[in-house]
Length: 91
Ligand SMILES: [Zn+2]
Image 1 (cartoon, rainbow, N blue to C red):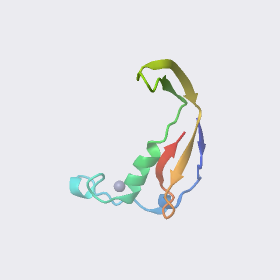
Image 2 (image 1 turned 120 degrees about the vertical axis):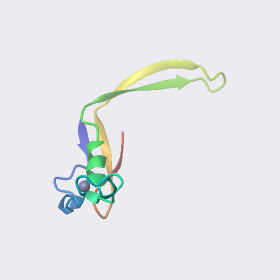
Image 3 (image 1 turned 60 degrees about the vertical axis):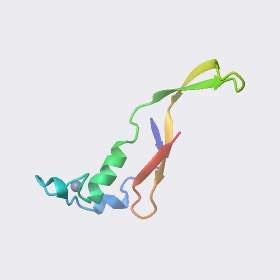
Image 4 (image 1 turned 90 degrees about the vertical axis):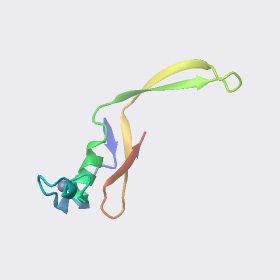
């Protein structure tokens, strides 16, 4: 899996975790901890190639004419401009 838009050290890496262990209201995801929130987003990036199916559908009948699968080998990361956090990815 190739990740386009990888950054070695995005800005948010310097934000420390402010979760208070044992206090659910002051811990991610209820508490407002930017570090854990951004970490979770980064962890959601695919680590391996994956298969997707593209079905070609007849517009008139709504039936599937052709089924095809392809392997996604690279994704493009979409980052926030302030924290350089992962806000999404596309293939
Ligand atoms: Zn945290």
